[in-house]
Length: 127
Image (cartoon, one colour):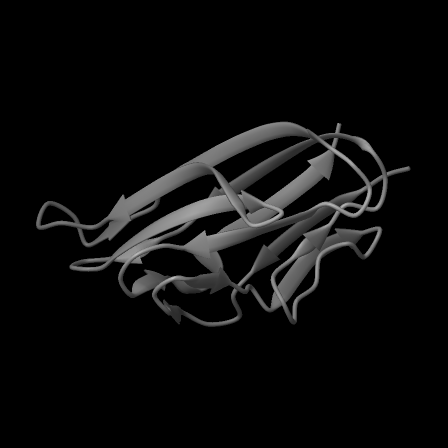
C-alpha cells in the first residue's frame, strides 16, 4: 500500500506554545492518513516510515519543533533567525517503524513559535 503526504500552512502561522502544529493544506495525501484539521498522521498500515519537516522563520522569530509518535517526543528541529539573516529554514528527518493506528504529529514546545507560509512543510511516507 502506498502512503505519502506533504502538508503546509496556507498562510504564515504563529504557533502557540506547547501545542500541536497543524498545517491546513496538503499537496499530496495518498492514503488520506494526514488530517488537515488536527495535524495528525494516523498510520494506516504497519511499516517503516520516513518523515521530514522544515520550518522557515523570519528575523527575530524562532521555533522548536518536535516530531511526536503517540504523544512522545522523538526528534527535534530548532529554527532561529538571528541578526545575521532575514530568514532561516532548517529541516529535520526521522525514520522509524510504526504500527497501524500510531499517530505522528509535530509539536511546538516552549514559547510561541512561527512558521512562514508555504516554505514550511511536513512530509511523510512509507518506505
